[in-house]
Image (cartoon, rainbow, N blue to C red; front, side, top):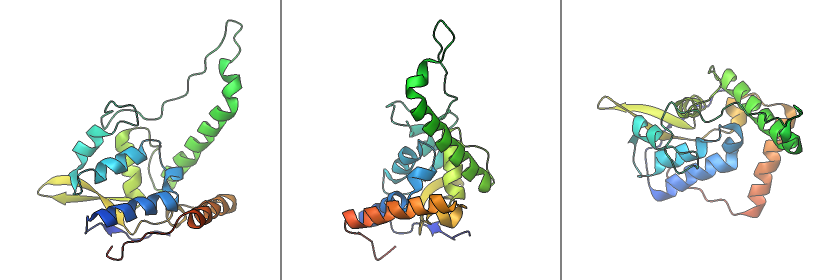
Length: 187
């Protein structure tokens, strides 16, 4: 099932856009922890390979404040209770259930990749590298995070149920119909 990806060699703006479209259109945001999008943007930010430590130190998970590599990005949800001991989030139970199902799906995907559940910024980077979305390369003794190319589809790296595969196909077909496909020929 594994697809071999290589580090992106040509960092042209067109290729960076093609990489982002491959991740987005391919469905990786549905199969990655919540801070993965910010991490990928930070990898691309300067248009050249960047030290992993610098990238991880800048990820902010949309808070505006850098989290740092060991900061948790998915904590256990707090279950508030009223004075009678009843759960206060019952009105949000459907959202909470969707959150918990999504996290469980990504935890299972991480296990399939041979990883523990991704809970920190560094875990997210390791998850994306194991999925061949990003690559780690060493240059002059420094570990760099770079985009991988070609970006595999989630079902090329993970075992999806028939229902999940149909949902992914439907998402991709809807995207294909809504916008013209832009691809860089030189990747």
